[in-house]
Length: 312
Ligand code: PMV
Image (cartoon, rainbow, N blue to C red; front, side, top):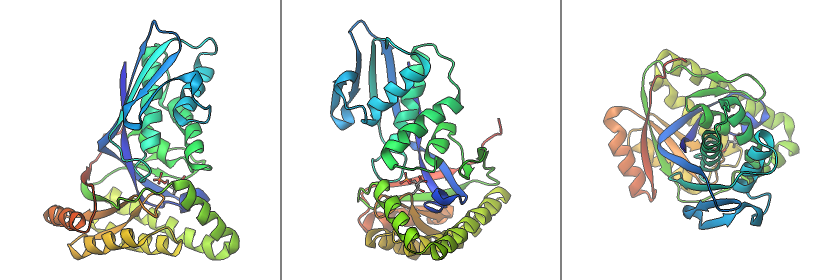
């Protein structure tokens, strides 16, 4: 049985979302993770993930390994012992440690493929909860936005500990995603923001408030279809992320070049320090912005369209 899950980007609100403010994330279907699970006559649970050079039986992997943790978590939650004999194959086109949800997408795809292979009727909510547990291994204390957008594969307006709110998209819009080429673990930038916050809580709470307001405004403009108004909001969000020290010279350079090339707004996306930046473009400027990012050294540029999703 096969299952897949998309990548994702955060449009607004990263970091502030960890402190209870709203954030917006959207799936990116051009990249994704795939998992294939079949019952096997060979003893044990064998995991093949060629992208990361892994071919191992579950019991030989450290329990904190995210793939092993997912399989253990799945089996102990839904099956109990003894574990079935399985063969698992995982592949992904999502760049790792770059804010595109690579680890989460593998968790979601694998959870779904295991459920399908074993004939278990597992809901999105259960998959989301399982993926969140694995996020904790990657990130420490994640907000839960990544697993939510990847599981539901639709734009989300996310606030921690609140019911999931999907986001209506009034009119399609286009985002260019530029990879800085620098891998930066989210755990580190989240930890640094935590230290900053602890050093002067009133100051950083005020910054988180401003970011949260930007997410709220962005929701209005996305829902009403006046997406071009998102541009200045993205620029403001980037400036606030710079204050939080999570940008980098490469990200700033890519943001500046995107704006020079005609983007309506641009910002880093995700944990920062490296990973990706995003730029809002009109149809006429997408190619020019993508070319500008490539010529500034971005090793991977993706153009993605955010389209209205029919309500379930
Ligand atoms: O996984 P990333 O790099 O897109 O970062 C997630 C967003 C943060 O707000 C920085 C962390 C979190 O848990 O929400």
